[in-house]
Length: 251
Ligand code: PGA
Image (cartoon, rainbow, N blue to C red; front, side, top):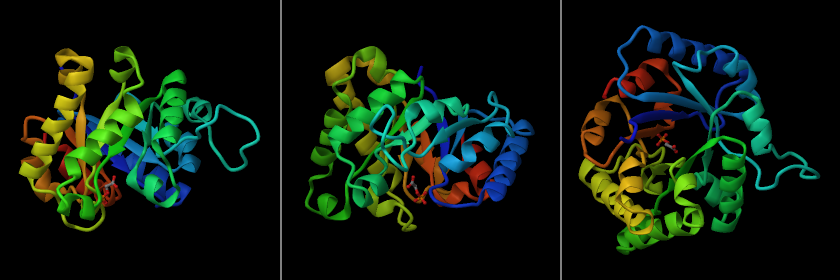
C-alpha cells in the first residue's frame, strides 16, 4: 500500500545553524511521538550535510529542494543529483511551482532532472498545480494532467513507482488560502486516475499524492482524511517544529 508522508519544504529560509537546530528539534520530537506516516524535511543545499549528520535517517528523511538538469561539468552554481545523494539525502523536490515560475523550468528540463535523480537513487517529490487563472477558466484538470504526462510519463512503470507526487495549487501556496478538502480530493482522484490509465491500477494505488498549499495543523486532519490525499508538502508551517508536528500528528 502507498505511504502516508508529511514533507517539509523549507524553501530559502534559515541559516545553517538555524536549520540544524530546527532539524534536531523535529528529530527529537518525532522520537518522542507516535508517528503514523513517513516524515521528511527538504532543506537548502548548504544545509544537507550538517543536517544529515544531526538526524536519525530512520526517524526523519532528508531531501533537497532542487537538483541540476545535467550530470556534471561546466555549470557554474549548479548542484547535481549525485552531489545531493552524496550528502546522505534520499529525496529531492522537483518542479516546484516557484522553480517553474521564477526559474523557467519546463517539462523538458524536469524530465532530465527526474532521470538524474532516479539514476542517483534519489526519490523525486514531483510538484504539479494550476495557477488561479487556470482554475477560474476551468482548465485545472487539463493543466495538471499535462504536467504529470509531460514530466513523468516517459518513465518505466518501475521508475514511476519511485515518484512521490505533490499537488500544489499555486493560488494556495503561501497565501493562507487552502484548497478545500473536497477540491484537493477531486484533483487527487483525477491525478490517480491519470496514472492508472498509463501504468495500471496497482501502480496508481501505490503512488503517494501529497497536498501542498497553506497546509497547517488546523486543516491537515480534514485534508488527510480524504481517500486520495496521502499527506502534505508543507512550506511555511514546516519552519516551526510545533506546527510541523501538529501536521504530522494529523495522521
Ligand atoms: P506553503 O508552501 O505551505 O507555505 O503554502 C507549500 C509549498 O510551496 O510547498
